[in-house]
Image 1: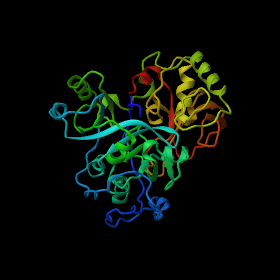
Image 2: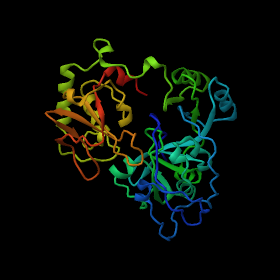
Image 3: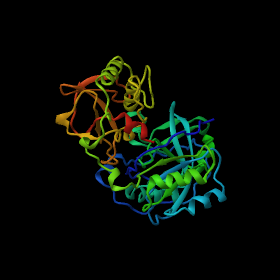
Image 4: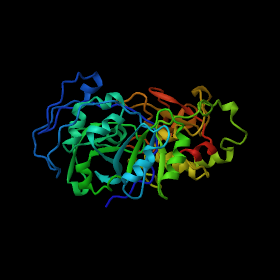
Length: 384
């Protein structure tokens, strides 16, 4: 049985790649592929499907897009009464139900959403939402995985991987759909074969409401144990882009904390990269950061794009040991934060690169460098 996802937190991100239609699927409308899309487009081989799933229904044409702002997770399925409570809150424009849990995919624990492709697509970025081939593939039983899980985690596009009670699932797309810790999307039919809970997740679109205030209202309206994460949050202007000099005294790590975190990180040189690993013997990039800073008493969020907002950005020329370096390497979405490293000093960084590699110290690669963040324990503890 899968474990219920306990935290799905993040910032809305983007795109996917167009793929050829699966066996038996209704032919989608012709879509012109971009160079990135052509890079991963591949005719599907005519092999028998191993996933036990019902005959897929045609995916409905894309309608109006809805920008997601909050992600709600409950212990029990949403009832119509609970949905009405959320729908009536001021500022709520649209709602979408999904099934959420952590499942085993190719031996990895992967936080997964099971969705209705016809309606869920409207809550993804425009390029993603517009891809008829992608949603036809998901409807037909494929799994769409994030670029980080696919590329860094070693899940080859179009390969078939073991997925517990679902048998094998075909990797139908690298698709960074924008729900943070969620790294895989399947259809509701496939979700049932995986044993996902039913209707325990709700996506809320409220583009003109203060996301923090609406979060508190949702928590007040729903049963105890409900979790609400901000996704592409709408926040007051004063909450955004605060310069470092305006942070209060004591906001940043002490010299002693930095020393402890750096010593902890360097003690793991040579340990293997394992996607989703949090230590103490194997790590992925953000897992290493979280573990090392925890040794210094700093509560860091788990995933890379959450760690991106744990302090102010500083110029690379002013980077100090213990600062975090971030990259945008995801070809499916150039704006997505996909990798993190710890600045070691003297132009070098310490990081856990990808599957097949180990924790190491190497010269900083500035290609696709998104920026440098100076960690604030106060800010880090508030990221959810």
